Amino acid sequence: MTFYTLYGAPASLYTGKVRSYLRRQGIDFVEVAPGSERYLTHVVPQVGRWIIPCLETPDGTIIQDGADIIDHFEKGPGQALRTWSVYPESPALLAISHLFELFGGEGLLRPAMHYRWNFDEQNLDFLAAEFALLIPPKPDRTDEETKATFLHNSGRMRNAAVAFGVTPETAPAIEDSFVEWLDLFSAHLADHPYLLGGHPTIGDFGLIAAMWAHLYRDPAPAMLIKQRAPRVGRWVERMTTREPYLHEYGDDVSAELIDDGAIPETLLAMMRYVGEEYLGELAAHVEVANRWLGEHPEIEPGTNGLDDPAARGLTKERGLAGGGLAQFEWRGQQIETSVMPYRFWLMQRLHDDLGQASAAEQQRVGDVFQAGGAAVILGLRTLRRVERAGHLEVWGPEQDLSA
Ligand SMILES: N[C@@H](CCC(=O)N[C@@H](CS)C(=O)NCC(=O)O)C(=O)O
Image (cartoon, rainbow, N blue to C red; front, top):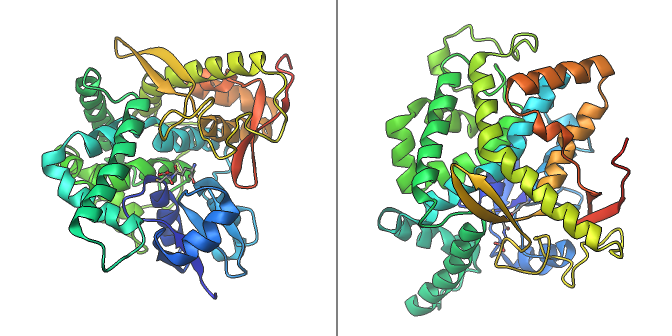
């Protein structure tokens, strides 16, 4: 195979992160459906579970996970193919960018799942057509069989939505919260084409995950974005094209990032929003994970500590999102969501990069995060690091948290 092959789908949240990256970097690839024979018989057995996105490189290597795929081009053998690095040199900008990578892929799941699965009148026919792209093509499949398969798969997703905190009780708050997000992002985009200025960084690619497949392609939220925050809609379009798409910023728009000594108030306001909306949940997840890890010192490093090595939740299977529930207060309500170690792995990317900075720079990043109401993330640690081995998330050895 001479090209990179991306196994993914238009309706998939995490495929969007990688597709956007490849397009923006001008890297040629073909996208192949996960219902294809090659994906099912060649990729899944290597990866150990049905999961997208996966990338097959021209030499046949399979990479699973959006961040790992991006790092193949950022730091690995594909580096010569990318045009610029999505990791800013400034420690403050890099840490902010990681914060939004985490928030975009994980923190926006509540609105993503709510606007996908609670607007059947507007969305359901579209979703049935989109979900048909996830299963093997079969010309002789009857309409009844197609319908039954969609019911089964959409049922799994509706259960996952509940595990992310989407319930009839939380629905009004999810909508208030999402509109707030659109207004804040829109205000920031008035002066900046991307999160950190003149070109996209890893934070934009995290944000495009939820903002593309679910929130911009599905009919109901697309209408909301177009009516409420057209500038955010154009950012989505900008993130998914290869050519410059900068109409409202004029001909002489700079490709430079913002000055890390003068973080715009609009960006600090977005950070504050992430702090209030999501970091309480993340802190609750860390607490639950640490309690569980403390109770299970026998877990072998290099495993997820469960019978099923492909399980994605902290504890036993509980629908798609896995189990291990954390309770926390969100917008005045007590809610509970599933703890997923993958989020800790994304959080560690922020910590690890920040750990490379000088003490003075770390202090400065601390001040910026304090001003942005997001400082809590800098101190969150799990008793064991999450590592990735054999395409799966596993626990590392216990780490010394006193340092
Ligand atoms: N962290 C992963 C998350 C991938 C993920 O959860 N993908 C979804 C589709 S968007 C999936 O494959 N879910 C498995 C399923 O539906 O069973 C990544 O970025 O690769």
